Length: 188
Image 1 (cartoon, rainbow, N blue to C red):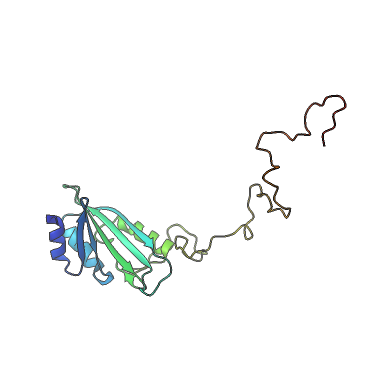
Image 2 (cartoon, rainbow, N blue to C red):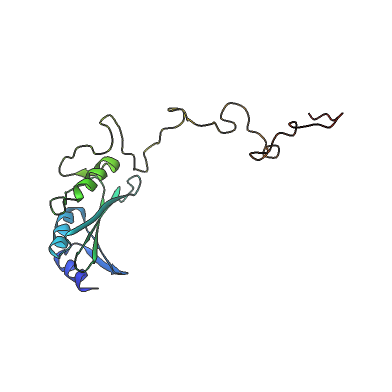
């Protein structure tokens, strides 16, 4: 354990802090998310890098729906701290008061994954009429039935049966009935 991770572990007693390959990671319960962020900020990690979300799929027996990750850096030492929390239906407090750049990332997480934030946020990317959260695993993509495919149809999609692979010529190869014929030759 490095000195930075020991300091972080001392300031966040509810977190599990580990360092591997030069990266300090703190697993924090959702109710201590803001306290952990303040501790990292107080330790000198004042440069915001990114905030992201992992979708764990449908909530299972554990109640886990999303994992929220926050990566911040100490500008002098270039050492990073990764804070991670796992959410079910909990509300996530905002860290934008500590790092202004986190506001955009939090808005994206709320709009694209449906993360409940403590402060209400306005839409960032999608129109107000859009329903659902497009980066969730359970989001159903629009099919070709709803919106016609603008390109060429695949073999068999136009109602006819798909051509046999044995008889289909590669692209650019003309049909055998095409081209000059010798006298008396009949190609059918």
